[in-house]
Image 1 (tube, rainbow, N blue to C red):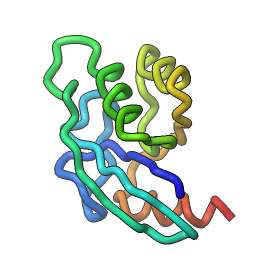
Image 2: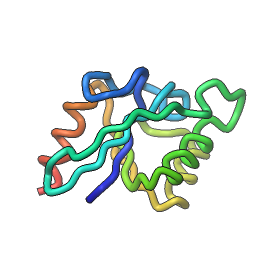
Image 3: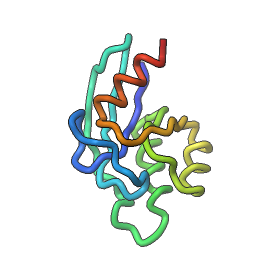
Image 4: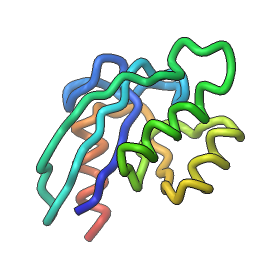
Length: 110
């Protein structure tokens, strides 16, 4: 099983990828097993309205949720290094719906 997260506005498969990693209002967290979506949860991003450190707060949330992969826009430098230190891989994806991004990830994982 792999757990991945995608920055979103309202969350869910029908939402689009939010254009700013740390400032996304929510993250859609998706568990994939045997190339099938097994679970979808939407969690609020605590850094969404923070005056600073939004990306690092977002990474802390994702690490606490057990996320191993992030699909979405390139994070800022502090969030990038926080992802790296947390052992979370980042795959740059923009301009897609959550569903399209997940489907592409599953196809590429062959």
